[in-house]
Length: 163
Image 1 (cartoon, rainbow, N blue to C red):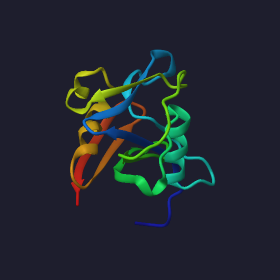
Image 2: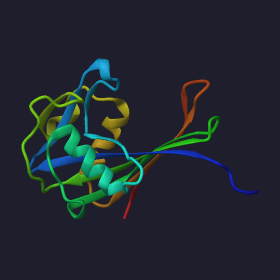
Image 3: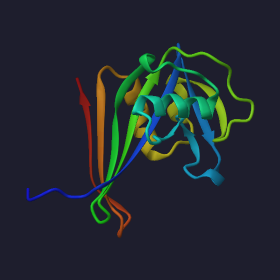
Image 4: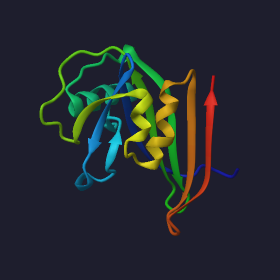
């Protein structure tokens, strides 16, 4: 390797809230992009930590409060675009303890408690459908995708279960 490369990096979070055999999902409408069922989350803001961003995004999108120390880190999902030197990283968490009531008019779509065993039958983005079961397995995961922005195709994908 020769020298350092400047890389732009976007940091995002996703947090699934589990209540026994149910999980909270957002049914995101077409008009907001990424339609279908997915977990709450979003961009980490400066100067907050990854955990602080996770807590804030969960509260903004659902009305539920989670303490950072109650977050269970599950893994990283990253997309790398060599042409633009951009790395999009999603830090994934699971929360089993929470407080509060669900928002009546959530900003990202309808909030739905779904049976974990039935969730994959719902319409989901392919990337979330691949990631969803990993939240409930032991250990952590790493998903890495290399994306060709010009051809709009995935060049490489690695999914690993860790520890």
